[in-house]
Image (cartoon, rainbow, N blue to C red; front, side, top):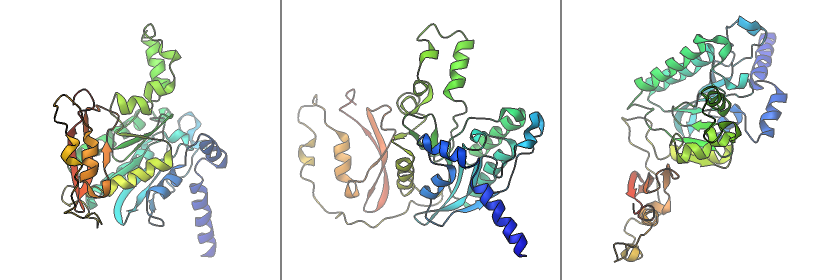
Length: 330
């Protein structure tokens, strides 16, 4: 029995290092955390229960059987955020660049199915290079299975989408499911093959211009927020989670507040100017109305003439949709 337990611990240790210490150091050198480090920051300490730690890909084409790594590039499981259940999967860039294989997709689908069964959200942490081309259609079909579950879970536990694109890098850290399938290198290659270089010359563009945080927060609206680094992004994910219900049949959590509900705010009497042509800041109004000035804005950099987000009034979550007079006259 001791031998079996020892062997099990060795296998767990092997799985926890993913692609190995050298690749972990390379990940840190790029200013990025590993998949397991991200999960540790996102979830409550000691709450993570991992599934399918020893899963490996089954591909034998192109000598793929010689490079099988436990976990197959994604860490999956469940835990809690401030005591509330959350299912999570985190792409491991140190293993095959976090690319999706058939087995990899099955791990994610299993988490999605469990989340729907138990009425809890899925948080996906993306740092990956798309599909694993060695597996061809099998890997691409994996995306189809994941997308299918997004549809099945619609209006249940996946409709709200929030992404944090860390500035200066081409990856998305996502609360729910939209997928960034191809990196900037793929976009550049397609531009070149399609003869689209004449206008602006895509080959001279920085990767950030082709698919980074600025593009996705200001133009495509794929990402709702951009953060300085992984740590800040994950902290904000925890903060957002506290505003939301676990599913469409539950109410959002109610939080105690020291903000007096009957308090007066005299500055609101003069916030809106008498001259209708003079702008004022709608965010100032929101911050003075919500409990303790705590407002989580969604899509701050996109369509700035409207403000959307979450706050609390008397401890209960409130959604805000407000025109912003300081930008394009609202």
